Image 1 (cartoon, rainbow, N blue to C red):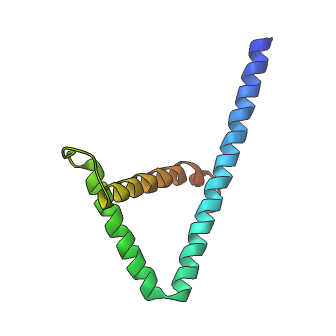
Image 2 (cartoon, rainbow, N blue to C red):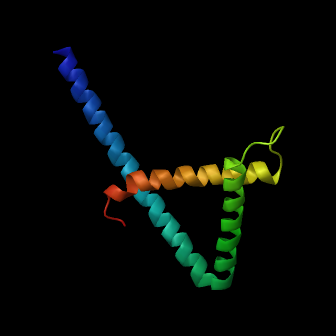
Image 3 (cartoon, rainbow, N blue to C red):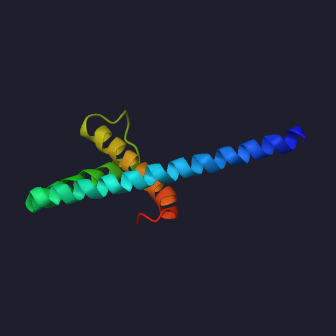
Length: 105
């Protein structure tokens, strides 16, 4: 009897966690869309320039992450862009996994 109860509690906990993560992902998508809309409405030129600069930094971070490591640690801009790329990739993976289940897209 204890095994069945534990299974039900675990299943319910997973379902609740899935709903919370899906709501968080939908809220994040909404915030990103609002930021893009407000940015574009204030200045399309700065929005385009900012997107280009962000793309350049993410590309540099990807290059730093996936290239063969040099001797020593990464320093300065290389470490910053590598961390930025990693965080962006993890956020994109989170959104891909959890926001596809809601009707916000």
